[in-house]
Length: 219
Image (tube, rainbow, N blue to C red; front, side, top):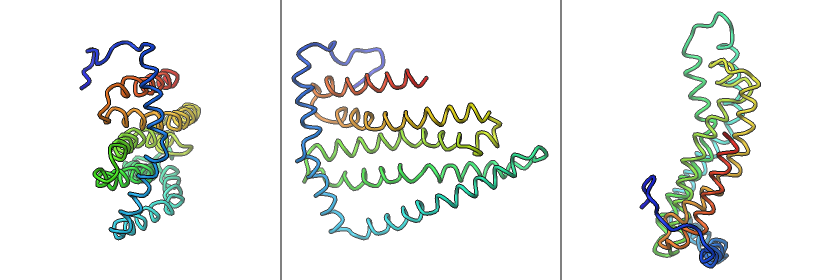
């Protein structure tokens, strides 16, 4: 259990090197990853309708991205007119922006759901990785939503009157923050949900420190 301002482990020392290496080997162990893949394949074979329904829905969502961006551009042009007083354009643009940011988090949540049913067959790694995907989805979505809001001619600049320069800087910085922080978030979630506190306080803590450094650079 972690409580703000209350120490949950001792300071990092040389004795943490051993558990850190051990945790890293467990994280990159091909047997663990093969078990996850094999479990998902077996799950898809035993319950193909879930994967078929999700694949169809997800591909429809993915292939509509270009159309959603065109709709967003049209709404932004309408809302950007000086004499425009119609709030409906902004509300519709917010919904479209939400849909544009949705495919990747939905993908993470689907595999999180399916992996949770593989715990008994695939050990702790599948459960820990499922938790990593859940946290990744929770972190990715608001960041991606903000990035899409700051897109050129998007919700921020055309509806909220953000400056183009400010929106461009925010969008660029959110891009690298998402790319670098998401794998670290998954690692943190994996070890925070694993039943080995020494691994969490070694590699898990190093990952958390790296995440804090990235956030400090971003802000």
